[in-house]
Image 1 (spheres, one colour):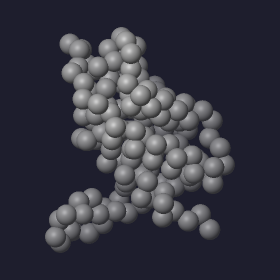
Image 2 (tube, helix red, strand yellow):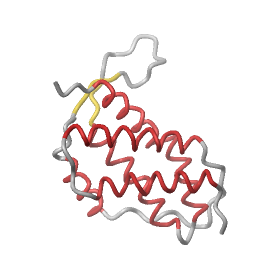
Image 3 (cartoon, rainbow, N blue to C red):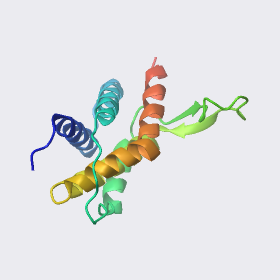
Image 4 (cartoon, rainbow, N blue to C red):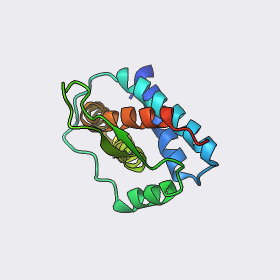
Length: 155
């Protein structure tokens, strides 16, 4: 199957992001910058993903051991909890809510990794789910993480 440049770019960004979270952590300042680079590339590449009709299968659920390994790796991440307004279009929000950078990075990883796991046999299902979950789930995690990391000042 010939893949479009947009799918190739997204798949590469997803693979690089997942590989980063599967590797040993770097220094605190390195980790922050790596996260920002990966997340901004993913977001930009997701905007270019084409529509796809899924095959007759869902991506396999990611084994919990993958998530646990990523959660353990992120336990030393330099940023943990942060504050944010969840819906910027609510006229009078209740106030800020807390967010978790670990949760943002891990949930994004899980949604991307599930697609990567099925891409070889069901590429259209992977593309369909990446686009769907970008809108419904991991895209919001990426935006929240980018905002938190942008404002994080380790000094």
